[in-house]
Amino acid sequence: MTTAPRVSIIIVSWNTSDLLSECLMSLPRDGTTEVIVVDNGSRDGTLAMLREWPQVQVIANAENEGFTRANNMAIRRSRGEFLLLINSDARLSPGCLDRMLAQLAADPHAGAVPGRRWSRGLFLGQDVRAPFQPDWVCSACMLLRRSALDQVGLLNERYFVYMDDVDLCQRLWDAGWHVWYYPDAEAVHIAGQSTKRQTGQVSREALRSFNRYFAHHRGRGAETVVRAVEAAGFALRALAYLAASQVRRRERRLGEMARAHWTYFETSLETRNSTTRGRNLK
Image (cartoon, rainbow, N blue to C red; front, side):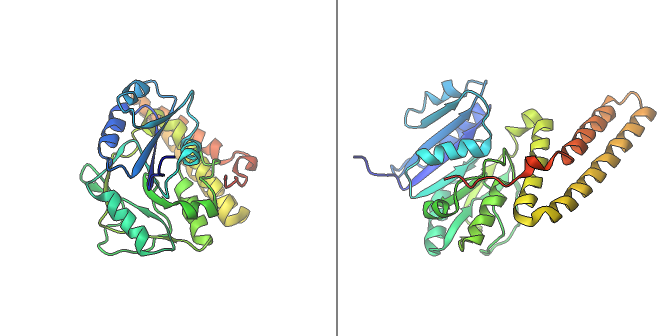
């Protein structure tokens, strides 16, 4: 029987073959980790590229199952005491994982710590030099304690993409676990490389996830207020872009923006059945 790895590294990929290769090259190879890649139906040669990494476990989905469901597939297969969720468009700086593990070891009640994320020289997050406890941290690079995840459940699959990390951290706090931010574990994240391929659809899914979070954690009253503000804002923007498109007819982008914001207006008014509380899957 093989010894269980200390850390299971989980990557969800969708049409980011080149960036995924860079991510894999940044991971430690000291024999204490296992790497599981879930490919969500990529059409850019990702699976062919992964054949060059025989040590990587691959789960190949026929279609895009969403970020949360794909992560859960890998979590169920994983064996590590700790789980590192990292986006395919992110990569670890040298020593990053060791520092994150040390941070979890320093507080036995710590359930999650992130990598301090940079993108092409731009810092993504609060630029602080001392550790602190935020409400939530981003799952683009997040180290989790398995015992904490066993208690609160896996990622909530009603969040197709976005807000899954906010929801998970809320559940960790509610169960008595801590979420820490430490500034010395650095990762590079070239944000949005998968989602930029379907910007409109992803924006609608992000809006749905935002509303589901409020329905789940803040109640129907808060959700109703949020939806009303969203609907008013998107409707006004759609009308403004439509009016501008009639004056500046050569700028086709204005008409496209009007249609996009009207779609977001319609999304904000979707039936509440789409925001019912999701399962915290085991």
